[in-house]
Amino acid sequence: MSVDAILFWILTLVVLVSAMSVILMTNPIYSALCLAMTMVGVAAIFVTLNAYFLAGVQLIVYAGAVMVLFVMVLMLFDLKHELQSFSRGKFTGALKIGSVGILAGLIVGAVTIGKSLTEVKAVAENAVVVDTTKILSQNLFLKNIFGFEALGVLLLVIAVGTVALSRSKGGTHARD
Amino acid sequence: MLETSFLNNIGLEHYLVLSAVLFSLGMAGVLLRRNLIVLMMSIELMLNAINISFVAFSKFNNNPEGQVMVFFVMTIAAAEAAVGLALAVSIFKRFKEVNIRFFEHLKG
Image 1 (spheres, rainbow over the protein chains, first blue to last red):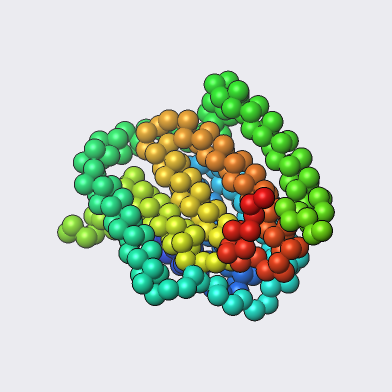
Image 2: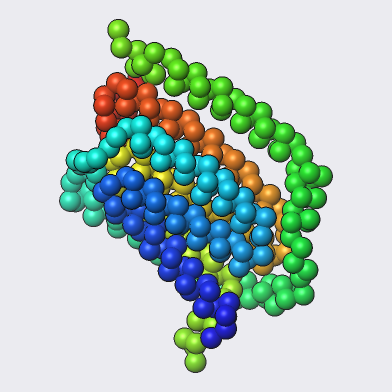
């Protein structure tokens, strides 16, 4: 087994186990910690895919900023016990899990059936230069500059909206 | 023979299957959990699964557009988390709990 393969399987194990514990833990703090572990695993998977800059951004933005936001809000709520952490109803629960399983099976089946289409391209990727950050920045700032600026405007709107939402008395429910 | 090649040669389809399973886990979390915060964590899981498949396609097709798209998805995810958590705070102020069933009182 090559090193790449071993690395991929270990990372897959880490990501899937921690993702499963995100949805199975009843204490939200543990869920948040498992989600941080998942983000770190995904960043490592980005490294195996030669997306070095994206791996750094994933670590800083997701495992840093977004997780701090989540944990801070959780600490604000002081949620210790959690009643009804899962939705009620055994039949509907089985239905939901079944539909999720069917979705996963459909995607996996489609991917494995279309395997012959992807194998041709996998041969060509050996001759690639791995300086992806430069290519990425050129693509972002030369071809997609409008989307980049639009994202800046979106972030401004979101920042103003979030402050307005949490500052108004009672939030969405004005207590009269 | 077949199994070893499946284990050894990591190709595009491995990453796509990983992405699909991760997306399904996130979807199961959204469907099954009732806590709003955990629900949004599950949405983040789904967005991360999409990011993995974007980067995998970007690598195996030699096309940097996929990584640019991951940038956009990350920004949208951060914005969505901020707005959702502000809504959660306002729900908590009113009901002292963040169960999703209180969202039916949001109208009006």
